[in-house]
Structures are given as structure tokens and as C-alpha cells.
Length: 364
Picture 1 (tube, rainbow, N blue to C red):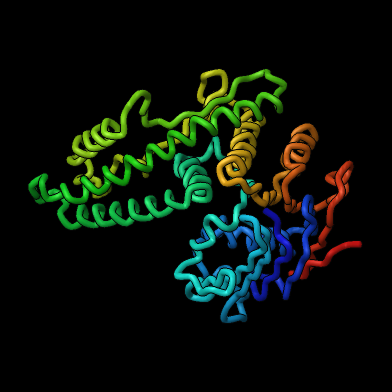
Picture 2: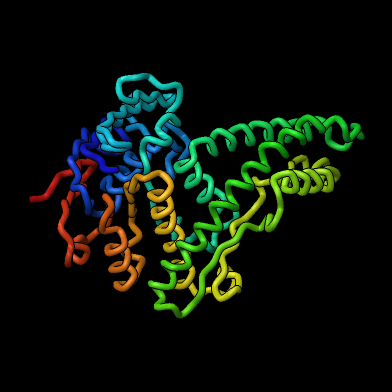
């Protein structure tokens, strides 16, 4: 897919912005605080997900404005499409002239992969960041996954509320059965989606890591809920048993302590935990390999090459890794933010935009 043009009004510190990006590389440069990341963020918003920086709408709107508006014309699924997102207390999406019930309607229409400094810390970060990586990628590729995940979180919240109300008052275990049954039903589907995806992701990421490292280490990833040789019914039974075993401790901590919302993506180098034994450079290469593999998987599953957003990560990588990324993403539309663009244009053509005090200007 490709963005044909993109505009925003009153989005964070950005002035009235309108760009017609190049079909491949687009570089946005400027000093810190001038609006580079805000432009990348406004593009990401069109995926239908929350910002990768905040969940608060108010932080997305210029401080002296009642709302922000983002518009994007893009080519996807064999046709040109138009999306308009209005952000105020809520978010209102119009897609191809039709008012949608939720921005999530963009899932399955607009595909993107975002790299940020937080991404490079995926290995060192807690399990929640790795779960988020899985959930966002899967939702983009499999919109039904997003629906199941949303239902699961709603039931989980209800069960947690029930735990807080009952505490240790000795309620019969049967009191929780309806919620447990629904968590098992939805959770087993989530686990199957994740394990199938991780198996393919591991293959792609391992190949990419091998290219970057010249085959010096073997990278792999696995899910920490073992489903090898298990049927769907057996996965459900295993999940049910874990919920039952944790019920007493759940009542003490007033929180559901087992299920997909607690699982982790385990990353290994030469069969050893990369978080513990990997150097900083190795850990960054692990994270980079995962995100590049995500881009590959998105294209294979959906038939659409995602727009790739690289926000302030190139400066943290050595020249070898920078060169690999640019070569690897050569067939995709890419947006890169940086302070100095000259090194990124060594052997690439594209467009360069300068960000100055919220103004995005195309350079000749």
C-alpha cells in the first residue's frame, strides 16, 4: 500500500500540514521538538489503533484548539481510498465517505509498522511491551483477532471487578464459573492465534537476524504457554486448569493472575535468554529483526506491503544496521525521522521534508 497524500490540522504542535510523499523513502529532519515525531504519529493514527505515545485524546490536540483533524488518501486493497479522523473528546472516523462506528474500521484497510526508541528496548522491557507487539501486529493482519481481544479484555475487567467486590469473603467457586468459561473460550482462541503467528514470525526473524549478524548467532522466539501437539480442546482445558489453580491467589491479590494477558514472548540467542545474556547491540538486533519480520509477515498475510515508520531509531544503530534496514525496506514506502538526513541519502532517492516549529516543508 502507499500513501498518496496526508494532511493534519491542529494535531499536537503541527500547523496546517499537507504532504505528498514519495512512493519509497521519505525523510523528515529537524531539531528535537519541531514536529517530526508528531507527523509520524499522525500517520500511525490512521491504522485505527491508539497512538504509540499516549492514550489521552487531549494530548493529541493543539492546546488552543477544540479538535484535531487528520486526512489521508492512500492506495490499498486494489483501490484509492480516503480516510478522515477527527479527534476531540472522542475519535470520529469517516472512511471513503462513510461515517464509521469506530476508528477500528481502519484495521484491514491501512497497514503500517512503527519503529521507535521504545521498540529497540523490546527485549529489555517487560512482558506487556512484547504482548503489545504481538497484539498490534496480529490485529492488523487478522481483524477478527482484534475483536476477540477486545471481548477478552472486557470479560477480564468484569472478573477483576468481581474479585475486588468479593475479596476473601468466602464466595463459592461456582460464582466465578460464567466469567471463567468465557475467559477460557476467548483466551484459547487468542493463544492459538499467537502461537501460529509466533511460529512463522520466529522463522522470518531468525533469517533476518542471521543476515545482520552474518550468521554468528541463532535467534528465535517462542510463546511461554506451551501448546506443542495440543488440540484446541486441550489448550482450553490447560487454560481452565490454570484459572482454577490461581483462584485462591486471585482472591488475595484481587486480580486475575493467569491467562493470555500475563503471557510473554521469549526471545533467545543460541537457546539462551536474550534479555539476560544478550549484549545491548544484540538485543537491539533482536528487536529490529522482530519488527522487520512483522513487516514481512504483514505483506505475506494481507498481500499489502505496510507503510514503515522509523521514528528516531537510525541514529541509535551503526552504519551496518542502517544500511541493512534501507536495503531490506527498499520495496516499501518508508518515513524516517532524523536530525541529519545526509547519511541516509547516500544511495537512495526519495523526498526530504524539514520540520521547523510545527511546519513541514518539502525540500527541493
